[in-house]
Image (cartoon, rainbow, N blue to C red):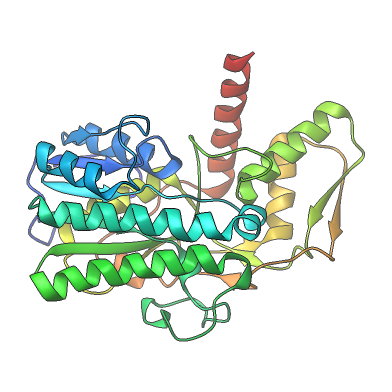
Amino acid sequence: MTTDFPGSPQESVHPLLLRSGARVFVAGHRGLVGSAVVRRLAAEGYEVITRDRDRLDLRDAARTGAFLRETRPDAVVLAAARVGGIMANSTYPVQFLEDNLHIQLSVVSGAHAAGVERLLFLGSSCIYPRLAPQPIPESALLTGPLEPTNEAYALAKIAGVVQTRSYRRQYGASYISAMPTNLYGPGDNFDPETSHVLPALIRRFHEARRDGSPEVTLWGSGSPRREFLHVDDLAAACLLLLERYDGDEPVNIGCGEDLTIRELAGLVREVTEYPGKIGWDATKPDGTPRKLLDVSRLTALGFVPRTGLRDGISGTYAWWLEQQEARG
């Protein structure tokens, strides 16, 4: 296979575990991650299978199992999840725990029952302890307390990692899991109540410039450090793992570099051309002090992210403006 997408490996040194043109069901194809994975798979010649939420509720194990038995894909990418930022996680922990558990149980068990050969479960870097060593190796999983503000979501994702690992150990299933860092890009959620930090910042600064606000006040101290990966790079990493990784342990997906939220805010202010000041409300939670992933396992497979943060933010901002204009 040849490709000019971001994040492609320089060389092919491992035998392919997913045949060319294989049929792949992408669960969660409308979301930020799923839509990027669909674009990547389709461009590489794979046959992509999707189902809209109104036709298939992935929390329904019986219907999900029946769908997988009917379509019998060669592989599944489980990108469907209830996701959100600190506010959403803190407000709706029951839904973040139960919805994600139901989705994972339905899809993974249904895939196995339908004879699906390959499955990639996508978790999150929040599965690691709040005070994990930096950069965070995959071996840090379950070695300490979680960040309280997203504990329910993290526990659901940890269960997904254990589930895929258990299917490997008990049934010999070629199922793997990966833990992406903070993601952004076209398809991101810009809702002020449920968005993650980067789209939230883009929207805040854009609206402040539009309204002529002299200052934007942000949550926390600005000192936490975060790593950000463009979703197209994430999609490239997912395909690479499907084709070349078959290990028991999860694989971190990131760029290996981080910056403070204060630095990120300054970068977004520049991209959106907001002329005002930035204030910080230190009475609001910061979340985990630092989340930088050790990506050496992924790098060893040949992965190189290709989208710089500033360029990625600019492209994401342009995409959101187009969506706003289209909605009138």
